[in-house]
Amino acid sequence: MDIVIIGSGAMVGLFGGLLAESGQVVRLIDVPGPHLSALIQHGLRLQTDSGDRTIGVRAGPADSFAGPCDLAIVFTKGPHTEAAVCAASHLIGPATWVLTVQNGLGNEAAIRAAVPHARVATGMTSWPADLAGPGHVVSHGHGTVRIWSSEPQPDAAMHQIAAVLTTAGLDCTADPQVEVAVWEKVAFNAGMNSVAAVTRLPVGPIADHPAGRALVSAIVTETLAVATARGLAVDADRVWRTLEMAFADHRSHQPSMLQDVLAGRQTEIENINGAIVAYATELGIDTPVTKSMRDLVRLIAHAHANAAKLG
Image: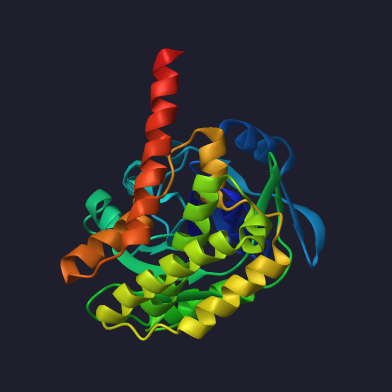
């Protein structure tokens, strides 16, 4: 299978490296400068529980490649989805499937805005991955992937794609209920990411303080209420178990939204907390804590912008 992976983070390296290692034709698109140079010069260094190895991968800007692919996997952050997919639109033909495995909500709509003819699938993954340096991705532990078509009629291609990902070691299931998994992950991210971004605390210190746990808990509860109102059979116990595991096993981890705040980058707050609030408003549901955290992260971005103007 000819696979294009669009994005710049650790998940691009994890999926791209494992798929290339399993024999698929893989191209990495939208890779930033130092990371791209390292990939071209030295290949991808991938450290997993299976070992530490270097994998040859093809990487570059979208316009350095030609021809439609079979599958495009999107890993960009939500605010960059439409522009990144649009730049790679010449690689997306009428038979290409575009799979979003991104955080947050609204990514399908952004893909369709960029490439109206695209066949879109939604995915969710629990795989961990960190960018340890240019061209160097680390992933320890196990994860899964769940995918399903966003098209009106289900397509047998979902099972083929799932088989390709599973053969690469990514443990993928074609699951018609993938939207449930997406919303459960959104609940987790809305709580953990926004609290970390506002407090500038990693996971452990948030868990150690009653106020941190209370904020995360309130956001998760509000998010799951919105999902339930939308008719999704979300499992609150499963989300709480995932949170407790993160509190116990990933104490030093800085959630991605905190990393973005510390680096002065645009965050995914609109695709996570902001999207939840938008759905809640449509349904007439009050989400005061989720909305407050959205507004606080917006103010942090405003402060960065003002500081930049002042030089």
